[in-house]
Length: 315
Image (cartoon, rainbow, N blue to C red; front, top):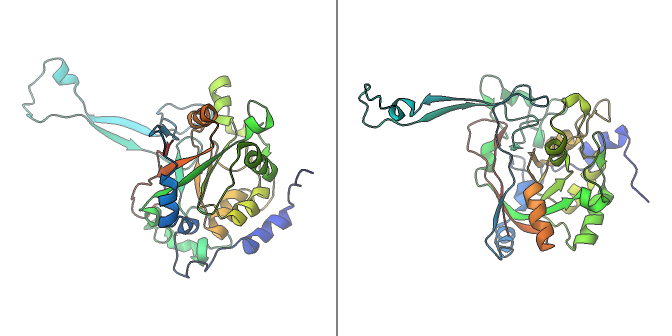
């Protein structure tokens, strides 16, 4: 029988039921990636059989679209145009092209990880750190992305939900349920284990490629809150998908983004938003193999609440 969508009261109970506060010490700011032990990383390297690499990131684009009204900004500080036309008036012997890039990487376009300073609940973030420790003046003075300066290097597992359901993509506003993940385990022959990086393909990025971008008000698919107990039970270190990782329109009045609100503040779960899982899904289907070595390296940006990333899967 399919699992029922939990009530909001049940989801509110997850904040205490699924809490990892104090599990790795009262000063811990890393959370679930503590489960990626050196032994786990070493075992994951044994998954490399061919040396074939696959990027799990989207291209960062500069043009505004219906679903990205405020895109990242890029302009050239220096270029080679003068040199290309033979203009050497400047007399600079070491002329070079340089770029400026500015972006709000949180959102629905840039592939990025959220640090544990990104969300709050009742005035606190993970491990009881006060929300005011993340300020406009100083940034994230607790739980910043630099807690992940060693990166996340572990076994990656792909759950391809459209393949499991026999559809092209999940509908907007529809959530991935625990039985989808359990069905993928049974069909694909893997078991999600402690310290894994769990990747959930919904097909929404594929749909965008087929139909084009739509306004964010159209909604989005993602894991439903019902998946949170399974994430906690299995001890995943990082979870990500090809969406912004919360179902919209919101399914609850108070806990409007439960994957982020419960996952980050209670569980200390690092979240990978807006991944490109199309290429890795194809690679998995070609091999009939749904586990691989994966490396995610956040930038060491001082006092920030996350970082753009280009995760690499290796088969």
